[in-house]
Each structure stands twice: as structure tokens, then as C-alpha cells.
Amino acid sequence: MDDLLDNRSSNQGGGFQSSNVPNAAAVLVLGIISIATCWLYGIPGLICGIIALVLHKKDKMIYATDPQRYDNSFKTSKAGFVCAVIGTSLSAFWILYVIIMLVFVGTMASGFNRF
Image 1 (tube, rainbow, N blue to C red):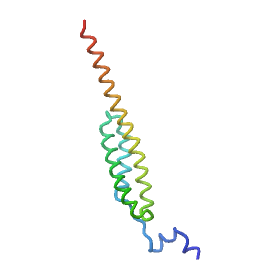
Image 2 (cartoon, rainbow, N blue to C red; image 1 turned 90 degrees about the vertical axis):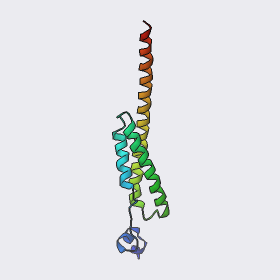
Image 3 (cartoon, rainbow, N blue to C red; image 1 turned 60 degrees about the horizontal axis):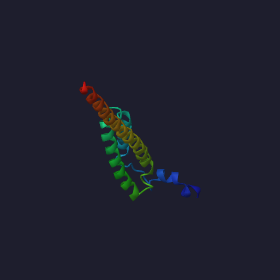
Image 4 (cartoon, rainbow, N blue to C red; image 1 turned 180 degrees about the vertical axis):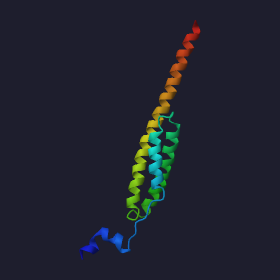
């Protein structure tokens, strides 16, 4: 009787099968790449992060149709989402830093032309 109430036994019985969200691994890989490449002037990290965020949104809509079926793989997609948010934020800050430095160097260089 306890086996009927246990959710873990339903995975082995054949009545309930777990499926993977289609883009879970891609979201995780792109999220990690966005963190790893954020220091490359922010461009690759920003691109990978945005793609990962879009793919996670699609996974989230698929997960909403049957949460019990996609529960395990959606955790991977959520981890990729967190990595993508971090990588996108770091890339955006890096791009902002580069722009500020270019403006700063440009104004400093224009000050030397007065002599």
C-alpha cells in the first residue's frame, strides 16, 4: 500500500515517465559561457546570456504544461537561467566600463591638444 503512495515508485512502474525539457542543457551551457566570456569586452557574454534567457523562457512555458513530467530537467534550466543572468549582468557592466573608459581617455586626449 505504501508503494502506491510513494512518488518515486511511479517512475519505475511505467505509468509515469519523466521527460527532459528540450533546451535545459543548452541553457546551462550558454549560461556558463556567458559568465566565462564576459571579460571579452562583454559582447560574447551578452550574446550567449540573452540566448540562454530566451531559451529558458521557452522551457518555462513547456514546464508549465506538465510540471511533474519535466521537474528534473527544469532544475538544470533554472541553474542555466541563474548563470545567464549573472553572465549578462557582468557583460553589461563590462561594456559600460569600456564605454566610460573610452570617453574618459577621449576627453583626456582632447585636453592635450591645447598646447
